[in-house]
Image (cartoon, rainbow, N blue to C red; front, top):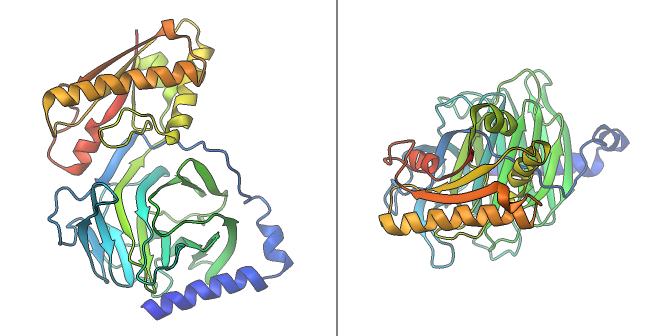
Length: 361
C-alpha cells in the first residue's frame, strides 16, 4: 500500500508539472487568498481528543491498516494519536456529515528522517463505505479529493468512477514545518472545499468535490517515514445562522471561538465568528447581548467557573476593541460546568459543553 500511494502522489505531482496549459486555465478560479473566513459547523457530530483511551493503545473510534498509538509529549500539551506506519487512518463517524460540514484538527507533521518540512501525509475526503476502506483500491472510494502538502506547496487532486479516475488538480503555496503544531480546518459546502492553516486560507476549490457523490469519510493517508501527531479532531455539521439565532430565538451557541487549554486568550482563528456577530449587532443597533462562557465538568468546579467568566470577558473585549461593538451593549459572565448541555461522559459530549453562548438581553 505504501508504494502504491507514493506512486499516486508522484503521478498527481507529475500531472501538475507536465499537464500543460489546459490544466492551468481550468483552475483559474482556484487561487489562494489569505482571507480567513472559517466558521465551524453548528452541530458537533464527532470529537476525539483521546482522553477516553489508554496511552499506548490505538483509539477505539478509529480504523487503520497501519499502526499507531496514543502518546503524550512534553512539547505539545494533551494526548496525541501518533501514526507509526504507512496506510490509511479513518475516524469512524457514524453521523451524517450533511452537505455543509467542517473538519478541524491539530497536527504536528513529524517524521523519522528529521526532514524540516511536511512529507508523506495526505488528507482525503472520500465517498465510500466505512465497512470497506479498500473500496476502489489505490484510489479510494467511488469518488474523492486528496490534499497532499509537500515542502512549500499544498497539492490537490480529485477523482471519480464516472470520470474513470483523476479529473482535476492544482496547488497553492504554503509550508508546514515538521515540528510545529498547526490547527487545520476544512470547510465543505456541497462541492466547495476550503482549507485553512491557523488563521490563513490555503485552498478555495469551488469544484473540489465531484457531484453527485456524497462524501462522508475523512481519511488520513500516511506514506514514507512520516510519524505525525494528530489530536482534537472535531467534525461539525450544518452552517450556523447567527443572525436568525440571535434575533429570532434570542440565543446563539458558538463553537467558533477558540482558546488554548486553561487559557482565556481568544485565538486569531475566532475572528470570522466574532466578525459575523459584530455585523449582526451593527445591523441591529437596538440589540444588546450577554456573553456567557461554559466549560465541561472535568477539573475543579471553582477553577472552571473562574475560567468561564474570564473567557466571557475576553470575548467582550475582542468585540469592543477589535470589531467596534459598543461596550454598553455587551455584558459578560461565566457558568463554568453548572449548565451542561450533554452528559460529561465522552470526548464528544465534553466538546459540546465547552462553548460560548450569546444571549439577547
